Image (cartoon, rainbow, N blue to C red):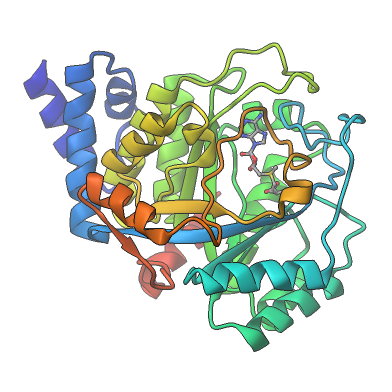
Length: 359
Ligand code: SAM
């Protein structure tokens, strides 16, 4: 069996496009020993293509207003019990100041999908960050028009995170009433065309998902050659239509993460907050199975509980009182180092054009 696993791993690693059967075989590994072969392989690929560093990103969840109906997400407009907020420009700038002071050189501005949000307001926030701080700005505010994406790029945004959630058109469409898969793909292509470093990702544990559809997600990540990919478990939220479903299997998340590392080689892969919500041990295992990015949460405490995507979110913080030495000791325990660089994409401009061909 071990030889079969190693042979399959080598085939997947070397293939221009890995075969579905090889990926499903590896996604189905069950015993600890078998999984360790996969995780160690992914760890070596991470070491070769990304090095020892753990890159830091500071996330500010600046608004939980959302007009989308995603039946798995606590921010969806169905959740009437949620009190909605939007931070002011000054509150965002003060928070960016705080994370910049902590030597973090990427800020992620994330929100629900709010059609009322004025694109010029966000452009102004982006310009103000650009003027005051030397750092990368990542946006994660959902599907917008080409013009809006262009406006924010011109204002100074560098990166954009828009998860496909699943690369299966039928599962995507059934999970997103009133939205559509082709539009999501178009947004991802537009972002690439405009020169953003583009992040994508999926959730593990969605209704209808199988190892074959997860294999398709990994093939999609390979084909689109994303700069960053976030893979996390679905976690049921009681105030949503999917509140009674089973959570995603964290070990399957780890296997998907490891395979995504092996297949995409140098995409930035976080060990996600959703995975960490299953325990610090899972977060650490993510870093031993291919991850190279840590997300630190800087959403102001006054609104943090209202960014209620799913219950039990396990944030990683770094506040003024939390000496960064504990972060270094943690990295050291994983035989890694904290990397304070800006952490731009490791993809070359030429490979990024490949995804123009998709669909
Ligand atoms: N509005 C932006 C968008 O659509 O890209 C960003 C905000 S959205 C809340 C951020 C991510 O939360 C989604 O891409 C999804 O993967 C994740 N998410 C939503 N509900 C979740 C759940 N119940 N369990 C785990 N992750 C969830």
